[in-house]
Length: 211
Image (cartoon, rainbow, N blue to C red; front, side, top):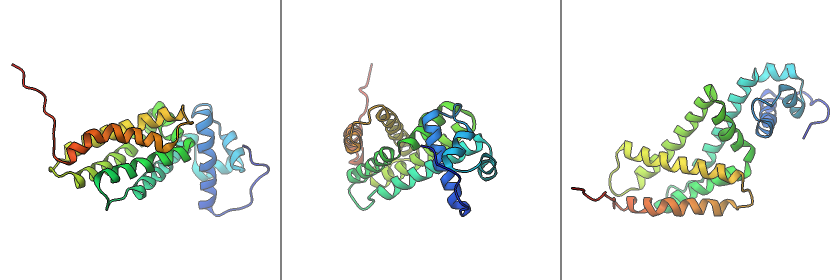
């Protein structure tokens, strides 16, 4: 939706937020290559020279959007986790916070996952950084909640598996928006907790010996 006219003078932080909101909207709808600075400036209600002056080139603006949306998502997940609860409730509250964020910010997830992952280069680095932060958060939860001590590599590998599953399901969900966030989160919870539940209790599966 385009803003009519030009906006009045605003504090820099407010203006930058306005620009990034507009950019996320345009990038999510048109994709990085098809999005133009003309379109973004029109949606933001500012001139194109002002857009460049505030946040630089289209590449710089896109990278800034990725960083901001990744931070918003991680903050939503971290604040949603209930660390004083049982391990299953901790995991459930984290998944619910993640899918709640994606559901309320679908344009954000479009930019974070679909757009950033297909562009490569510096944008892929931003996405890798976000994924690393998510893996570290989940790994810390697993380490704190398991009865059997887990090595750093064990915790990180399990966390990477969960984060990857969450990203894939969220991407699927973009094409099936009729599904409620709680239902989608519960499906992943049921899938992973059947395994994580045993790991938390110290029960580990071993492959059968072969002669």
